[in-house]
Image 1 (tube, rainbow, N blue to C red):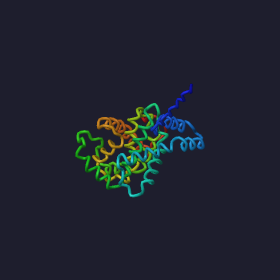
Image 2 (image 1 turned 120 degrees about the vertical axis):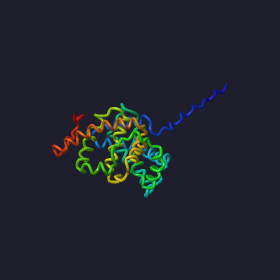
Image 3 (image 1 turned 30 degrees about the vertical axis):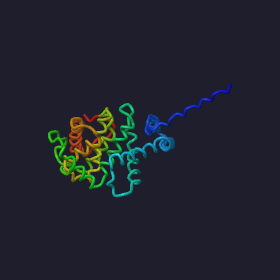
Image 4 (image 1 turned 90 degrees about the vertical axis):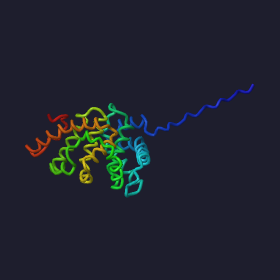
Length: 243
């Protein structure tokens, strides 16, 4: 009697391009201090996922208003995500969610003026005027303190952001606020309402959450301003607190 041959079913390949293996690779990347090993981990396990994520973000949210080719835009998004790898903390959320917001953050801030005008015109009518996180426009804020103070303030936050804020969603909101300061030369003519809209789009957070994070940052801001006025500089070391 002939033996019936049972064909083995092929396992379907996972369609998830940015799953646990990529997250584990990012963790290994951050744990390593060897540049050669870090580069190998990135090239073999992270780069392709970042490229695919950048493509998806550009097409999904229709960021088509840049003045240069798609491949250059994608390369810039990927480069920005690479710069943010050290800030990722696995105990505070999935890498996929974190870098999705990071990539979208970059695209929103760097889209050209046509996109900015379109989004501001479309969204200002939906702004909650009762909950305003900025007490003045960016121009007034920049006039209040000089560039050196801002640079030192950013250095402090770069060293202490994850000491002060423990939850991933709080870190994302705080970093979005800081990113506006980093790019203040390009956005200093934006009014406070437009900036607030951008923070909401960059993070996906609601008004109440953004307000809470910004109010906490203000406490540090005023202490840093006082320290800068008295001493001419800010202690930007990794302290976790300036109180």
